[in-house]
Each structure stands twice: as C-alpha cells, then as structure tokens.
Length: 395
Image (tube, rainbow, N blue to C red; front, side):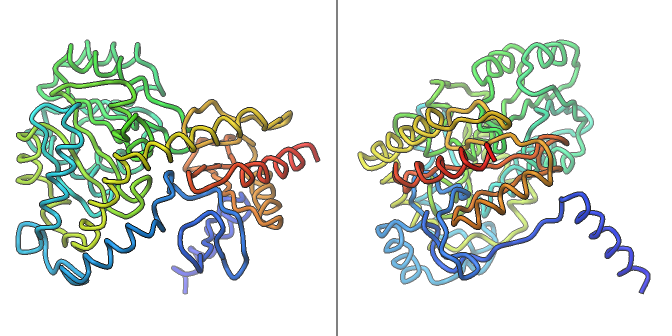
C-alpha cells in the first residue's frame, strides 16, 4: 500500500537521523528506583520534583476521593461534571495564589496542555483580528499550539530578549496584546526574566501569561512558584500551574482576576467541550496542597535545592557542558543526536534512566541529556549519577 510505504520511508529517515521516538514502560510507581521494561533502574527523568507522586497520604486521599465521588465525572464541567471536589480545589488554588493575583479565581483543567490552549484561544476570542500574541521563542508546544488555535497574529521574540520584546510592544497598535512565556524552560531549566516582562506588560497594557508548569510547588518559600520566587503581583498576570509535576497528581489550573476566569469559562472551547477530570484527582490534590504549603513541603524544597547544588558542584565535564540552571531541570548539552542517544543508552545499561532530548523538542545541534532531580532522591543517588556521568564523558 502506497500510504503505508510513505510512512515507512519517513520512519526510516527518523531512524537515520537518530530522531525516532520510542517508549519505555514503567512497571511500578513514579519513584526514583523504578522497574522499567522489567529492569530495575534509578530514574532521573520524571517531573515529580517534590516526590509526591507516590506519597502515602496522597494515595489515601485519592482512594477516599474515589469512594466519595466514583471513578469518573460523567460530563463536562458545564453540563454535570463539576463536582464539589472540583469546586473546593478551585477555591483552594485561588486562595493559595491570591498573594500574587488581585481578586483571584481559579479554573481546573485536565492537563496543562488544555489549559494553555484555553487561555490563548479564550483571550483572543474578544477579537482575534485585533489581537497580537508576543510569544517567547522557546515556549512549550502547548503555548505555540494555543497561539495557533487563537487565530490571532503571533510575533515571536528571541529567548529572554527583553529589548526585542520592548520594541515589538512599542510598535504594536493591537487592541489586545498578550505576552506569553514559560517561567522555567522545560528543556533548559533556566528562568524567564519575569520582572522585566511584567513591567513591560503593565506599561503597554498587555496581558502576561505565565506557564509555571515546572515552577509551581518547587519554587518559592511556600511553593507558590515563580510569582513567589520573584515576588510579583499584578492584575495583568494570568498564571497557569500544572498539578501532575511537583504536586504529584494530575491536571492543571489557571489563576487570574475573577473577570478573566469568568470569560474563559464562557469562551474557552478546550474547557467547555471536554469531560471534566475525575473528581477523585481533585480531592487528592487538596492533600497535595496541604503538603506543598506546610512544613513537609518546605523541607522537601530545601532538600531538592541541596541536591541541585551537589550536582552542579561535583559534575566535572570537559567535552559536554552543564547548562546554567538553578531549578530541578539540569540538562547536559551534548550536541549531536547520535552521541546523546549513545550516552543515554550507556547510562541505562548502568541502571540509570536519563533521557536524551533531540530536535524538534530542542534546536538542531543541541541534543542533550535532560537530568531532573526530585526531593525523593537521596544524596547517594545523585553521587551515583555523578560517578557515571563523569566517567562516561571522559571516555
């Protein structure tokens, strides 16, 4: 069949370029020492930054939530799927983020991808013809797709380039301006210059949409993410945080001024036309938030930051380079796709699971090993990884 042959040729081209993706299957919970494809490995690849994905209190809360609300929601939020668990979680999230958002209200989504599609398409629904989205060049795919879905004009500014964005905003005559950026860049680990971006957004009456997928729970004294880290507060902010990474469960939320949230509820197709997430997840997330905000959360963040410091101090590379990052994402820049794949395979053979990230997820020529640390790791775990990496890179 000609159509299948076309696919086979393209798949072989991906093989040749060391770009074909393959999955591994985990046979146990999301913990550092996990069984994958039947093999015991020490994993440095999950986004479970606080080590809550297998926390016994959250597991118990999830079980309790299933007993209270059943397995599924049965419908979209605007039909009959909005449960008391969802409502309580949204109230709690709004309260949690209120130090940084005026008249805060929150909306819970099935995934961060859906949340980002909803924000950008919903804001542009006022008038896509008169809306310009100013998008950071290294934004996550969900933000790129959200901008496309919005049908608004999109202008891309270079990574972290505040002066370039300033010029774009000054030249724009758009009725609605939306600046959108990741907070922690998922493949680099560095932070966006949010204080400067917010100052520009306020000066030019623009929304600033912040995707804090990799900051929520992990950054800030109480885990309020990048807004707490930079001590930011503004009615111009629209904040997206995911709940399947540091929070350890699943889903995402958008927090903003109550008027913004009401508009998204009215106009965001990715929110309106999808079945609500199981209420049991929302119920479990209430316990997750208790941990994040409490003494245990502070202790876990402190331990995580100690592990980051350990890795950065004791990793000694000559051919490759550790990219600048103060977050749990610590990428080792290798460059060549095939070399990165061989390095990941060598580590896996030694019982260490570190993924190789290649284009199109990262730019050509910047393939890397993406190390992610978790509060569930020990100092000995990180020492084991350091020994393997220091030896591997010097071979």
